[in-house]
Image 1 (cartoon, rainbow, N blue to C red):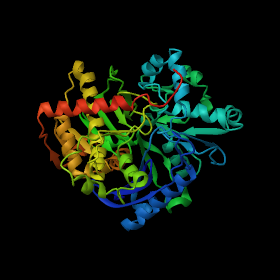
Image 2 (image 1 turned 60 degrees about the vertical axis):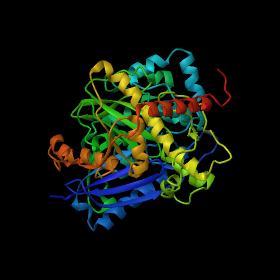
Image 3 (image 1 turned 180 degrees about the vertical axis):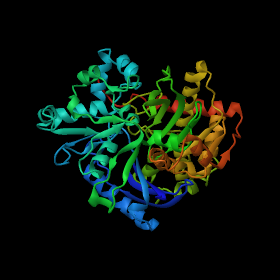
Image 4 (image 1 turned 120 degrees about the vertical axis):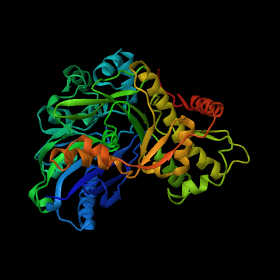
Length: 502
């Protein structure tokens, strides 16, 4: 029997590949960053061919580092940055334009137009999503409108739309498959999460031809195999989930009421609501967590657009640290932020505000403010934003009887002990970091492994999840309330900053 699962974790700033053993431990991993393009303020793009080059490169590197061959791999699981939108030529595999990244705001004005015409409620009712430039549907329309000949070619069936999971499967199978899974489909503004189908009414509103769309499949099934020349053996491709849903699965949040928060480029909190799609009254998203054997599990989600990216900004924009790892040491030089609050609304604000016109703001600066205070305020901003998401979730689920007992955490930022302690303090809830924090890739591995019998069932996955460290809250309710109040005052100063009509 093949001894390993290979997970491809295609993220916003890097492509990664991780080889997992049967006990969920990591045998080897490889990672490579790729170029971020910012053609205009608020626009973010990726070169899809560079994404494939880095992803295929780290895939080979991880196998080599593990000292194994492709024939030792039982299956490949894929997890991806969601909402990032690509259109390519169905026959040649050539992208017609750079991929438009989830962070990109170029379609904000069109979303405003749709909202003004009364369509926001329809989109939310069918897709569980807020009508925002974040999601793929308006990006697809932009590409069809702005790339010469794209609409004509799309209507002739010559083009494929996909999120990055679809692109990777297309490349892994040498053009043999054009598919996605239900979790990724649920992030497009084109998919009805209640019927499990692409929705003609929404396609018409966004003027997207159905011929562009991938086939929607389960999150765990054998879709096909890698092309013969790619790895030296044909490996089953058997799991797909968007990165946040995969992390929820990897955190073994398999039961109703379990929640996780991933600290990556952005910060995303998901709460398992089971077979019930809970409508949010607080501008959270209702999303498909995963689909197994045709049955959908739903989740409530809140997203922070800028989390780890604020540390990158301290490094690349301000130049006050040389590497991301230095931020914890710099922030530890001061006992607190000295009254400084940093709101990292570099690309607007996500839930619960959904304000594409907000911009980054630093308030409370005095003559005594140092780089250490700004670094500390940057780390605290991630925890404050996450606390607002959790509060919204608690309000949404109060009427359903779902009660959160703890928050499971993962992603790069979760390894920062000081930030996790502050997160527990500002939430007033225990924060639990698992032994394996690579939960996004692990979730993709679990989904692929279940499909080929590498793991027997979800009960086995529950037993693999183990606590690495637990952070108990150590802040009084009065101080917590005062700190959140100050944070909200700062957020108000960042809002609606960019001049716009409406």
